[in-house]
Image (tube, rainbow, N blue to C red; front, side, top):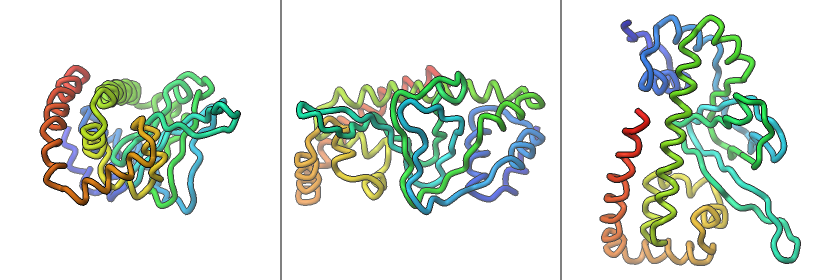
Length: 233
């Protein structure tokens, strides 16, 4: 069916519908019905999406900004510290499958920083929606398969040496991520000391030519991981 009606939807909701239609052939009736359930929010403060042990029953399209997933672990002195385990960038759907689909408690924490723009969609809306729109179930499965492909890509990133790893990280998440999170939060994800990451950033700014040489390995990395994406599309 012709989906030119998507052009009548303004961002951020329009961006979400364009994303969904890019992965599954959805009818105009589906888009219209979903649109009526959606609304955008600009976060005036950090949003705690879920805390350890809670059940998150809301998915969020991130139009602008990022989300961070982390665990709180105790060091040798018993002092709790945050360990970043993942990020979700703009242009993606943040959904915690074990919570949203299975009602299980979350094994980590998730937050979206202040200034981000999101489109939330609750589990109750999803359950109601799929009663009259069978495409909803297929769409959910498609989104989960994309998430698995991205997880594989990120695992490959962690096998790289520190400097190419940082390059690949910026290519996957975008340099804007550094505006939303502290050095220690990003360094934790990359398996680096904050001081090392700060020094690496300084070296890249000081010696941009050396930095370009590292992009060769990053390009190879992206070519290899693109083959992973094909398996899930």
